[in-house]
Length: 223
Length: 80
Image 1 (cartoon, chains in turn yellow, blue):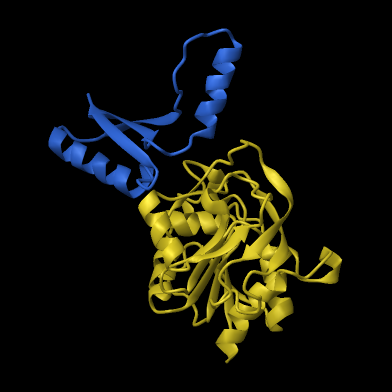
Image 2: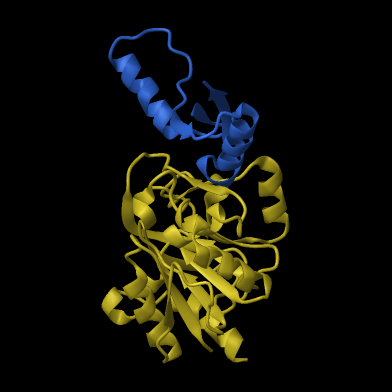
C-alpha cells in the first residue's frame, strides 16, 4: 500500500500527515509538489490541512486550480483513493471533486478543540475499521468549516450514504448543515473532512481514535 | 483597454455569518431600521482589448473558473 502527500505553499499539516501515514502503514509516503502533473503510482493520495495560498479569494480556491489538482482529478477518476483533511477538504470541494462548499464558521471564530464524531457510514473505504454509529474523538482547527450544500444536493448525499462523519449531538463547532463533518463522492473513493484524524493516532496524542480512518484506507488497499 | 468590475454576492438562502455580524454592529451604532446585510466581493480588472464582447466573454469565463464559487455565489459583470 503506497501513499502520497500533496505539498502546496501554505499547507502546514503535511508533516503530521506524513508521520501518521508512516506510523500506520510502516512506509513513508511520497510527497507531491503543486506543479507536478506526473503523480507516482500510489493507492492513496492525501491533501493535508493548512492555509494554502493564505486562504486568499476563498479557502482552497487557488490550490484547487494548480496543475497537481488536474492530475489528482485524473487519478480519482481512475479509482485511486483521495483524502482531504481540513484545507484539503476545502480544496476538494473547490476542485469539484466533492459537492457543496465550506463557508466561514457560523460563530465567525477560529475553533481549535476536540469534538466528537459519529461514524454514520462505516461501509466506506475510509471508515470500515469503525463500527456503524460509533462515537469517536477528533480534534478540529479551522475558521471555515461550515459545510453548505443546496437542498437538492444535500438530499442526494444523504440518500446515497455519502455523509460519513457527523459532529455528534451538541458538538457541531461551525454551523455545518446537518452536522456534516465528512463526506465521500458518489463513487466512494474521495473523502473530505474538516476534523484532523492524523492528530489522534497514538498515546502521546492522548488517544488513537483517528487510526481507524487510516487503517481503513490503507488496509483495504492491502487486501 | 476595457475596465471590468465583477461583483460577487452570496446566493439567496446561503447563510452569511459575516453579514449578520455587520448587521448587528450597525444596529449597535444606532442605525435603525436595517434589513438584512449581505457581504460580497468586488474585483476590478483591466482587459487589454478594445472588443467589448470578447472582454465580457473572457471575464465571464474567469468568474466561472475562479472568481466566484457558483455553488454558493452569484456574480455580475459591468464593463466601462
